Length: 357
Ligand SMILES: Nc1ncnc2c1ncn2[C@@H]1O[C@H](COP(=O)(O)OP(=O)(O)O)[C@@H](O)[C@H]1O
Ligand SMILES: [Mg+2]
Image 1 (cartoon, rainbow, N blue to C red):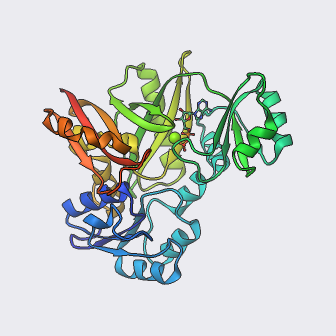
Image 2: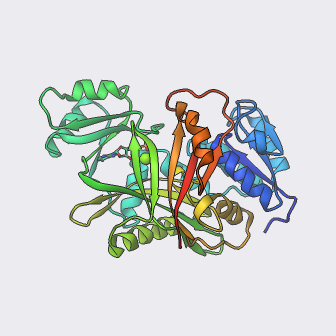
């Protein structure tokens, strides 16, 4: 366990880093943010920022020097950088988790090998692969770039309609290594936020139902009316994944629920997750504090929910609704310190407590 007053290094300076830094401060820790963009959301509330690229050797050396433990807030941290840092100071979650989750093929393979069911999938290296895969999937599927996709970017949907073709589809994702996933006819999308510490203790938050708009998470609602079988399956999958990765920290895992009661894992993020922001308002220990506890070697906290709630992302000019939101009772507002409200940009979120338990 690192002592109060120690420094936690955080790679990445966005809103997730900001909320981690705030949780770290509440537990008596200092934070240093590695992020090329000066005055980023995380640095505004951290002790220090190293303004440099994530793979800058001098910056990494400095980060290792001043940090007692290092973590990250986004999944595209260069794996080499994380592995290099890990030689000097502990990096949690393990760099292996980055490696697996950065590529949708290694991610799906890892999930399947851990006994977690996903949609069917095929590797797509070229138009020919895509044609063959579409044929196998009766023309239906979602083509996704293997790397760097987020908020629905780098994806093309094939619904089996006339006029869709492999050539245009592959070009539309930039003709880069991709994956074709079977098109899942889901009734709901849910996610689980789960934590594991070095000793193997695991805490799992209640599942949330997520609604996306234009590929971006719009709302997360807790509780979700799914069967206890589905809820249990989701928690079991998270537990299997945490153990298979020898994970330390918080991760977010997304699932599809099918009408026939099947649960398919979609993807996971080796970090705190947007669909877990509600925990800050409806649990004694938020996902952010839980992550800091895990990486700092503190005992994990209670993940039970004390309220029902709905988290709504404030995207782009949604922030203009702020005066009205601030006037609501039971609304917990969180803004990220971003100056400009561009379309599609996550500016903040609000969690509305709908019922106290
Ligand atoms: N195989 C699929 N079948 C049906 N819908 C999908 C499938 N994969 C993704 N989607 C939809 O697209 C959204 C974004 O895809 P996802 O794989 O989560 O990528 P991102 O990394 O952009 O979050 C999902 O939340 C879901 O609504
Ligand atoms: Mg997703």
